[in-house]
Amino acid sequence: MGDTVQQFFTVKAKIAAAEREAGREAGAVTLVAVSKTFDAADIGPVIEAGQRVFGENRVQEAQGKWPELKEAFPDIELHLIGPLQSNKAKEAVALFEVIETVDRDKIAVELAKEIIRQGRAPKLYVQVNTGSEPQKAGIEPREAVAFVRRCREVHGLGIEGLMCIPPADENPGPHFALLEKLGEEAGVAKLSMGMSGDYETAIAFGATSVRLGSAIFGSR
Image 1 (cartoon, rainbow, N blue to C red):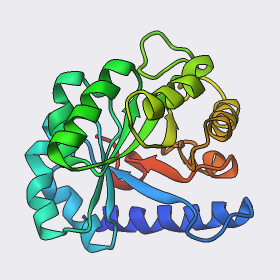
Image 2 (cartoon, helix red, strand yellow):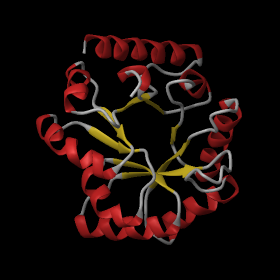
Image 3 (cartoon, one colour):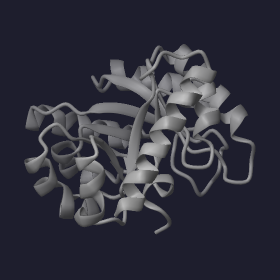
Image 4 (cartoon, one colour):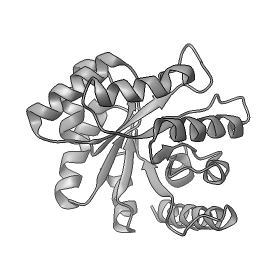
């Protein structure tokens, strides 16, 4: 467990250095610690070390471990960073403070219903498939700005950010640059981009949050 905490502090220092290098304000970038596949015993030491923002890929897995942890640490902010199925909208709205993977109208409709029904409004990001990869979730870049507008005007959703996962075998820089440009066009303030292998590049391109799992917890 000591290793995990050490890696956490190393990552925090690297984020701070990347902020300075990019001429960004200290603290401009939020670390989302990706805890998918790790259980409460693995996550606990990182919470104790001061981390409060975590990311999970699957609603069901998150339901198994986070309600208890959130009871113990009420200031935790939980992000859904994996694809959301419309039949899980109810559970997602109940559990997550931020949902980063809104990518189609069907999801937007279900989220809008649940937000009204539960009186709970998680922050919402639109996921953009910057590489137009057929196997990957996310809206096509050319449709992203119109979709954000539709979420706001038709579905009544507040969209505050964009998220992307660049293709694994490509230079991530152009994908981050594209997301930054789309974010400006869509009028959103937040950009969730950058993972364990490329987060320093993402910070240079304006990421407001980076999603790091293996850099903190090690390989799964």
